[in-house]
Amino acid sequence: MKKFINHVDDFLTESLAGFAAAHADLVVLNEDPVFVRRREPKPGKVALISGGGSGHEPLHSGFVGYGMLDAACPGQVFTSPTPDQMMAAAKAVDMGAGVLFIVKNYSGDVMNFEMASEMCEVENAMVLINDDVAVENSSYTTGRRGVAGTVIVEKLVGSMAESGASLEQCKTFGDRINKHTASMGVAFTSCTVPAAGTRTFKIGDDEIEVGVGIHGEPGRRRAPMASADAIAGELLTAIVDDLAPEAGAQLLVLVNGLGGTPLGELYLLFNSTRLWLQQRDLHVSRVLVGPLTTSLEMSGASITLCVLDDEMTAHWDSPVHAPGLRWGM
Image 1 (cartoon, rainbow, N blue to C red):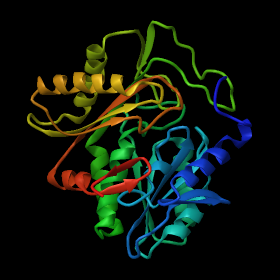
Image 2: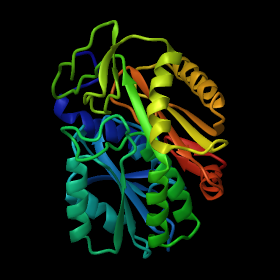
Image 3: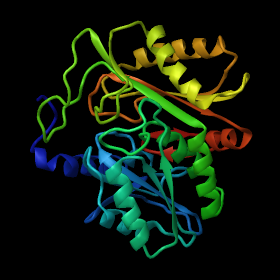
């Protein structure tokens, strides 16, 4: 295993220390229990909290800041954070308008966030993200997995919260965005969890895992390597079949790198994506390309589509200033 590590047990602690020091103008690290919070909270605003296992950076801590999250609770690599982290974060960032938990659909995350929600002393609600169309159930989930569509929900609801919306309005908006968002990914290689020290799964040099999960969970099928156009076509067929957008629909396209894929290849994959959509009278209205929901050093990518309306588009275009995403500031 070749990684920048001093001691495996200190990986998360040292990584978070570096993250907080690098972005000290935007975030504050709470060490016990561990969470990252926005340095300058906004009084009277609904507070957004997300979290999950580490290894998916910049998700979630990288999206703490103006226009997105107020706090993020990182667990160990690919391991859910604990309820005490979530409760402490909620207490720290509650500004009097309640707390909205944004949770990816993984059994550990859901269980722990639900426990925190029940025990939390502040008013709260939850949005569950389940955008992955690859499989309906896996060893990690009951129902569809939450993957890169989480970034879109955090950005759009973060903007709505910033504008002064109520907790109920933010939850309703988050649920609506989730229903209009779908993703699917493909892996070329596995990743190595530091504590394990070996590859999560084995895959041949001429094979790909179509529909892989962000923890290396199996997808729909193991297939021979194919062209970018062919891979994009398979992913997009599944996504569009799920969303069933009307002809002429305005789409937000997120081409997400899983950690080990060069940006040049991601832009090539986006080009294949936009041409496929154009041929079907589906309009690319907004675009985001880059490693935003990663899986350590896994090579591969995912495609996410969100069917936009005017309200979503306005909130996407609004300013954001977080370590992992910034525009309009």
